Length: 358
Image (cartoon, rainbow, N blue to C red; front, side):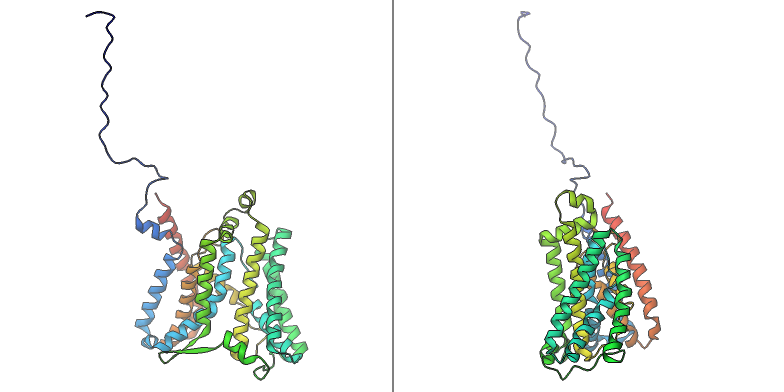
């Protein structure tokens, strides 16, 4: 064989086909873990457990009228819990939301009655006032850099004092006058406080509004640019600003959304009872926040959903009415709420850790 002869190239055998290697970033997680990653899953399971418990403990809950009452109680909490949840996802929370509901109702009632105007004039003015309160909270927080806890705590105390002082000054009493005989009352009542018949059961219109607002909030969070902004400012405000998210606009409008919710619930209370007690609303802000937290929203922001607070509000309504139907002492209601809040928080923490574990 000649030394000039070239060596034949070695034949390379291709590797046997096998499973495609993936790293932690591309690995497909099991369906169960992906479901657990949803913030509303934990509260959904909790709501089912509470529902089943009271079905067994209080047989009267099983009737259609009882369930309508439960859903009504849930809706009055849930309508406000939705904007509060959006605000919490955005990294803030509002301690003035409870008394803001009463401020809205007092404004509409006194303006209409004392000035002998159509109630719609009071309703529209109350909307402007409620949005202004929300805008003030957001602007003050952004402008000063103070925590929303301090800003809204100040607003809470201001509104609480103003509600009592102005009501006594204008009406000479702690409650507003009856507006049921005024022009426009019937029309406004149909929108905010009417009922309709479903299979012989009277269902409050607030239940429908609650579900409509929940669907709208879900669409905003998951399908719009504004929803992305909410998650961004709640997750990391400075990073969001660095990539062009209008942080100031997002924060202020979220507080104004809470103002809108306070207006709507305030109008419901006014047109349901025809009058408003000026000292009410204190403590309700904690119920709204608790419903959002139970629904999977984090106090630190950047995580949550609009569906979770729906189930959270349902749990509140179920416990509130279930205790009554079971014939138990209603003083235990707040104790149940505390247990629910702690339990839901621990469950949500476990769910998140399980879902993010690789």
